Length: 273
Image 1: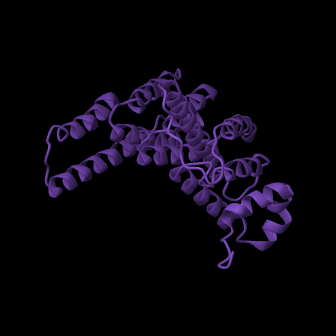
Image 2: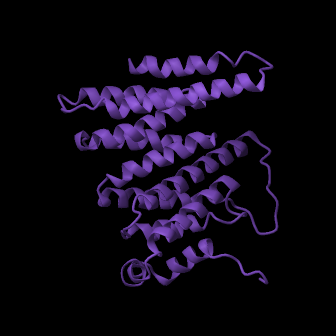
Image 3: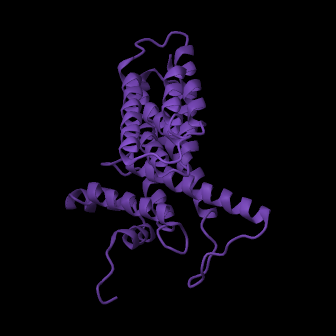
């Protein structure tokens, strides 16, 4: 029934798409219906717990359905897929094997670069939960991978220059790929950081230093910059609230360069600067 549930959400969205002029009340009602339906699907993912691994086929079949939904043309369906995975992972993480975890990470990571902010935000929230339950040595490998992608995907623009619009089809294609890689890598690193709210594994300072380079106007679009600033602000709130823990535990994991990179993002500019 799971494919039918996602398909029903698509039909709910599709019914209003052929109407040119829809009054505000109708649009508001449709939005509430879609929102409620999305929450219902997420509730199914957490309430219908598979209490036994069996042959492992049941979980794989569910993930196959969700992967199809994650590629749906309607953003509401893609968002519902991300919410489903977030709840499904929380209820079944102890039954997952490495293949299941890799599949979930792959599905959610593909949604990080979605053009709709609602989808990418839901995907990052789901990924945060997945990485929190993933062994730190595996997360370390993934962080190294995405740090390299993030470093290669910054906008190549000098200070004082405006956005240069690519003219050729090849240049436009390359720019779109670069933008997708930038958003995916930065959002992945933010999820890895937020997955450790009270600890500081060795990969967290590396990830923070990497995303700090995307907090400036000349290196990243507004959506990416806002996500970086919120992530760094949340890290500061959870790790620096206790002065003793910050000074004697968390701070010692950072190098001086990594500390300066973090401060560049979280510190407020002086009024007279």
